[in-house]
Length: 168
Image 1: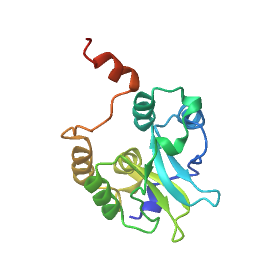
Image 2: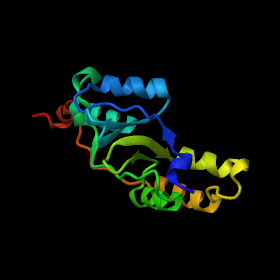
Image 3: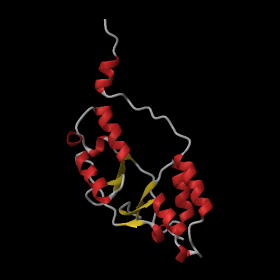
Image 4: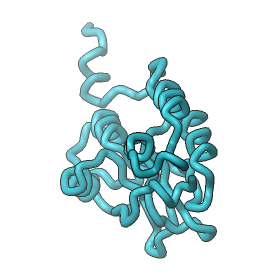
């Protein structure tokens, strides 16, 4: 089974120069928490998650309309190709602990997104018994992505730094 058999096509994207409010609208309208960041030619430059937005707003202590996508996005994301085997895409997701990956063509242009949700739907689809995602592989991928928790070095927001200073 190939990535193109289960990926989500027509994924919306945003640009680096747009405010975080644009990405937040996409999160709401598409009921997702992941948006690829693309150039004007559709080439994937990065990805933005709802978590990235929260951490950037905390770090910058700013309103979403004042922060650009470029300040919060993850650059150089791990992408997969539509003609890749599902097993290879899962290996990428496990290795990098990611639930979603952009699917790009040979020129790096966005053609879709592959998510752990897509893999779960494929595993549960009774019509695809011959070539479906193996449940054991899916469980292994999910367990590798979600655990154990990793502590991130997130700088404190300016207001927190002020609050922590000892008084003289």
